[in-house]
Amino acid sequence: MDTKETLNANGTGRERILSEEEACLVDFHLAAVCCVGTEEELRTALGRRLREGRSAGDFAVRQPVDAFSAVMAEAGYTPKTTFWMDFSIADRFGTEAVENTYRRAVEEWRSDAVYLTELTMVLNHKIWQHHKKDAALAVTYDRLWRSLDGWCRDNLHGEDLDYFYRTTD
Image (tube, rainbow, N blue to C red; front, side, top):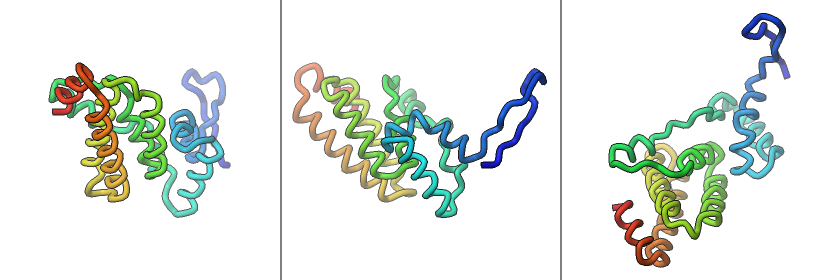
């Protein structure tokens, strides 16, 4: 890989500038491993993207736009999780990564009505986000949202169910 060197900020030495591919791998290493599985799978996904002629630059999601927080703030709701960002990262890897992120979130937070409620809202907003641009992601999010929404309505009770209805209304 080609790399460049430049003077560091204080001019006392040289620092390595990463290639575009290396920068993408660094950016995604921690976040993407949870979506794809392993670093090797991440490298494979990036390599496939580059072979298909897509740039590595649009592969990187350094700061996904957190539209969910902005919309929720207008409604008076403050997000309590990183679900929106987690799924924004998974979006870049496709439907399998979205499903994997969903499965992990549900397994981890099945007993937390507040987190499940927010997950339901995130899935619903992701349908809206992708409905015109990526039908496969929109359909995946719709299926996951319907499944979780139904599970919450059937399995939450008392104050948890009241919270779910009040918050998602």
